[in-house]
Image (tube, rainbow, N blue to C red; front, side):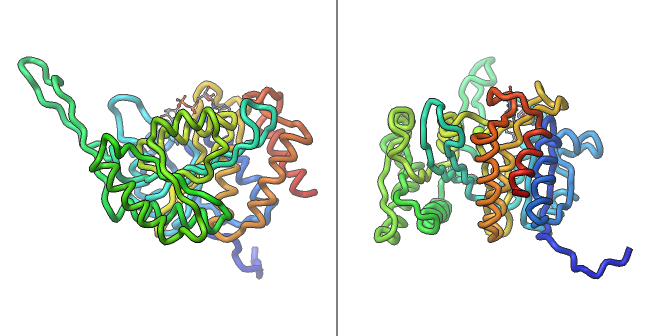
Length: 346
Ligand code: NAI
Ligand code: MG
């Protein structure tokens, strides 16, 4: 059919993923249509779904697509534990130099263990102990007698992530950045991170306050008084741990989105995994991946659409009280999605 209207939508790669991935990403696709189809989806395979087709969990076609679009929404991918292929998530971060992992944690449903949480964890995504330069030293007949692991933090990498965090804080009206480290013990590895981040803080001191915490004390403070934190910037492994902890403050994995951001590409995802125990049942909570899609809207400059989507989610959860089973409700993924669409249609 001839169609005179121009092709609309920003090209974006969509990887439905494994387990509940296709169910929750389908929810995003449906909701985005009501928001005027801001993205033109290029659907690509990843994870077990890709292995089943071509033997590779991260096929070339998927990489090529992200290279072309520079923008992706990714459903969860199943990763075999101990052996098997390397984490596709880590491969994607390395491939596209996605150096910043941005994980906001915000209370969406009042009445939980903590009220009014609104903090953001900025995790360095390419360096630190996560580089996993590991080896064993055999002694006698024990090939694993000594296990060794080296971490790598660079001046450039530390500056890049600190600048990302302070710039994010300044642009988003955030008041304070807390640098989290373990420089009292890992004096070189996390010392260079702390020192460099403090240099960056100097440049922002008129706009954004800065303090620092040792990671173990920070973990305790996140439980005792999470409201003291605004933006936290930290190294890869500490950010991995603290961002799950922060998700726990706001009701767990079903409510936590994440963004992996580099200079030339950004990949948005839910923090949770493929939930094989409920896959295919149509009961998964799509909120995490919807919130990830909301971050993606803002990333491409559509902040008003982000606000509209987050507002609709808030209304459905708290006014309509339509919730999926993990939140104590009875709604299916489709019923919850339909409720959000109805809210967006006003
Ligand atoms: P998981 O996050 O998939 O599930 C943990 C528990 O939370 C399960 O009981 C599950 O039913 C529930 N759950 C998770 N998301 C939910 C949702 N949206 N709605 C309702 N309930 C939800 O973690 P698990 O079981 O440790 O991992 C399963 C697989 O996912 C593994 O292969 C793991 O490697 C992978 N994974 C992938 C990630 C990614 O691609 N970003 C992140 C984390 C895990
Ligand atoms: Mg993690």
